[in-house]
Image 1: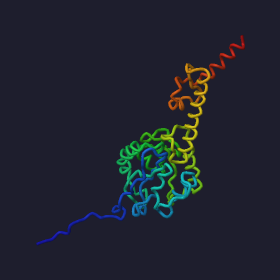
Image 2 (image 1 turned 45 degrees about the vertical axis):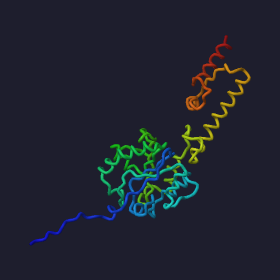
Image 3 (image 1 turned 90 degrees about the vertical axis):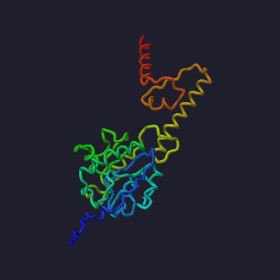
Image 4 (image 1 turned 180 degrees about the horizontal axis):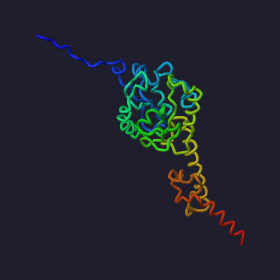
Amino acid sequence: MYFMKRLTPSVTRSDSLQCLPDVLEPGLSVVFCGINPGVRAASTGRHFAGRGNRFWRAVHLAGFTPEQICPQDDHTLLQYGCGLTTAVSRPTARADELSQWEFKAAATELERKIERHAPQCVAFLGKMALCAMSGRRDICWGLQPTAFGGARAWVLPNPSGLNRSFSLDALVSRASKLNRVELAAPPSVIGRSPAASMQSGFVFGYVGLVQGIVARMRAEIGDSARVIATGGLAELFAPLIPEIEAVDPHLTLVGLRLIHELNAD
């Protein structure tokens, strides 16, 4: 009787690691998307836990967090309107161990994830994932011309310590451009990040100002006065102010022209 040795597939350390859980919730200001988990991050269950990774230092210095967060407290990033995910879930020691097929296979699920959580922006850390998923090789740093999953897409340098092309100062400089406050209506009055709080203060503060002025003017001249919004920001504020009945961005210029014509006569 002959016994054949049963062949078992070889298992590497990275293959045996668990997937790194996302740090996500709906309506965040930005979701940082790493390429894939490193071995240490996957083994500890904490994002950017590698000893040489500069992510937490860079996002703090760029103004996203008031203090530098430790990897074991990665979930607290949600308090500042930011989230974490990865393009590919399989952990590796180096990102170049991933295949193009793995990126393409993960693309649809990542896009659906971003659509479900609806952040204002998704920031890819490094060009590798977005290049592979989109099939484009001409991707530049910064804001991208097309959205990803309905969110504005940015590309920032990979903060891994293996990336010697960018110093910490360079990482901070590029990340701080993403942290600039966009003039837009936030999803809620109570801001969950410094940027959302500033948006809320400006937008809803101005809304209250306009409503107060309209109420006082109507008290003086009567409720029959029609309210028309004009100027470059009219279309931003009009949906937030029920008193506004119409929008004409050029009404002020038209009025100035009419005044000129009347004076010319």
